Image 1 (cartoon, helix red, strand yellow):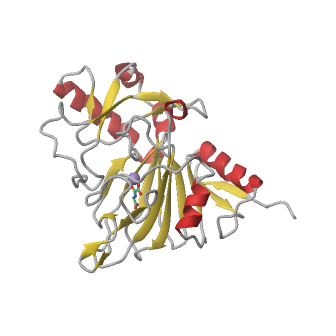
Image 2 (cartoon, rainbow, N blue to C red):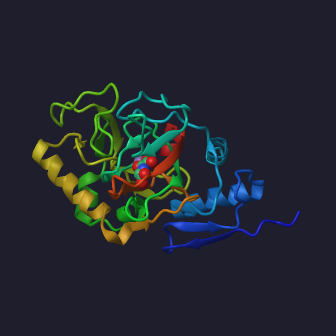
Length: 288
Ligand code: OGA
Ligand code: MN
């Protein structure tokens, strides 16, 4: 067979790339799988367009990056409690009076996926089945670049610190199934992670922030923690480090959840947006 003609075209020199030349189904040759995985490591966000995936295809291509992980707990269902335990439906659509998925139509705040776990997913894959004509764009921010550009005083302030990554709320501010609304920032449940991690596969330092609401920097007073977090988040989400994806049906976006934060714009509640997401299991070794 003719070797695959895969082309990787970056949006920025080192961040976000579109991959061309993959087949519309999920059966990838070893060369295609390697190229996709390498683009993901090199650019943090990879976009493939014009695909025709069912859930089996989405899970199959997720395996290029590792083992499937259970979907997160959402507003209504426990972790792994969807139609398939490994596929998370992100949607505002309501059928027979019941939402078919999570996150609704409002803005989703900046976050990395499931970073409240001790071993957060290494990759997230989001596939578009139905999209609104406008709105609902997904923004990605490069935490390797953000760390590189940190002012020396900020770098010094976070050296050796850990941040609590809170688990109670989804990125749209809804309470997760089985969770309680935190009483205060000190008691908010979550997991401590180093503020700066070394990416296990690229060796680059990354700022690892998780999500802003209910976060706390260990060992600082409340005011000190809030102030430092605000300064870090202002840096992290500066337009200098952001790529915005405007969706088409058949788009697959794969991000390195160790390196990238993401958020979503709100959209017209009467429009339909249906996305299926998978996540790839992390480990302490893989996460740095
Ligand atoms: C996700 C997520 C945002 C979006 O799937 O993890 O945050 O744009 N989705 O649907
Ligand atoms: Mn997310």
